[in-house]
Length: 253
Image 1 (cartoon, rainbow, N blue to C red):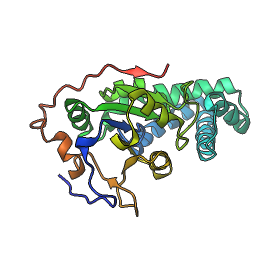
Image 2: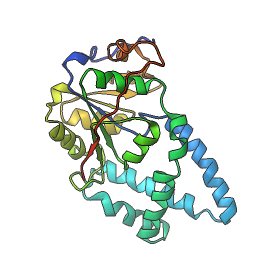
Image 3: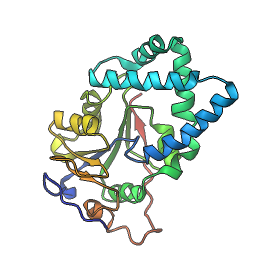
Image 4: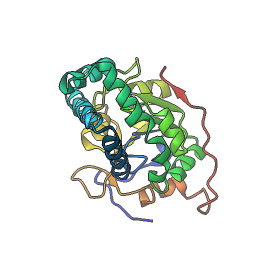
């Protein structure tokens, strides 16, 4: 187990009732997935003799970053409209392309990219009676299923009750309200300081950031076999005997 010291002190797992996970880049290796998906995109571009799909996805991701930076509200339709203006395609074409290439096509390779030991952390938290939540900027249910993970609460930025990307606090506030847990009894686990750490900090809530290197003033971990998670998984027994973490999933919609 990898030892790691946290700038803001150790995590007291016993006093936590709610653990909120980001999904993309937090529960799986996003760099590996994107490399695999890039190969699929290039093959598709060769077959179609067109780079339209790649251009649409690039415009969409750029627009999402800008909407997040601006802490914009009502992003459900704006994200497609802005990307459509930028790449010269219809909003419906952008939406269809995103649903196919970002939401559906990666599903069959997601589990191969799943972070090591994350299933044991989920199982350990469930065994200790913690409420597990996933707060994602993208639709999360199908991805969670593909990863073989379950949560009690699943919230997406485009849900009607949210309508904003992190670091806008609407999504995290909605999770806290659903769980009926105060910020002092909750923790956010993500992979981006400018999104996950920032949204937790805006509500006075603690956060952990998955990172390959230390970040000044930020509580980071390299993987789910770090010492930080020792109290969560130590009661599960040997690897391969992970307790069931099956949950009754509820969504915002």
